[in-house]
Length: 236
Ligand SMILES: [Fe+2]
Image (cartoon, rainbow, N blue to C red; front, side, top):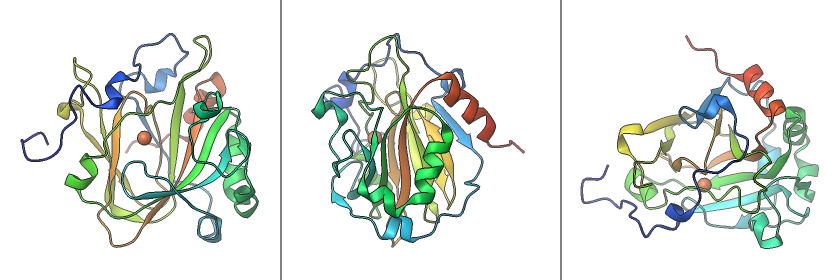
């Protein structure tokens, strides 16, 4: 919380400059909160599919490493698609995908245009540490205005029930609004879709082991909306 001791973003934070309002086609299901929970992962993923991959040193949201499964050009590269003049969609599978056939089939089964597909490996970090890395993503750079808004989906591969993704919407000044805070628990198989260009986000990882998750960028489209509807968590 913004109690004067922990870090809190101000107007100089790089995320504040990332556009919020644009004409891109968006999904109605994300309109209200920017977040939608899906049902737990219906497929068992063999551990080798994330443990045997080649990870790159790439810091985002803490002490992280990433294994790209699909990238802008199929190379093992963590850089944003915009470094290659490309929007974060229309990705090509990398050699890592050959070692992760179940994950690849899962992403393909969505049937929507996808961009970066990566496994994140996140080392433990407490709330105060994580907060220093809270940010919004620049998912839609170079995305033509008449195409779909790029959002991200998660599948938790390891069981981290004490960890959570911290999400916050914007206040009137474009800074994180604590009154909108949501904590998404990260047990094995947890799945959700987040408009990460809109919501400030970071993972608080209360554990002594790394957390692994599948992160996929998807272009908002009628097909993605249908898929989300078919996978939504049943509220009890
Ligand atoms: Fe992010």
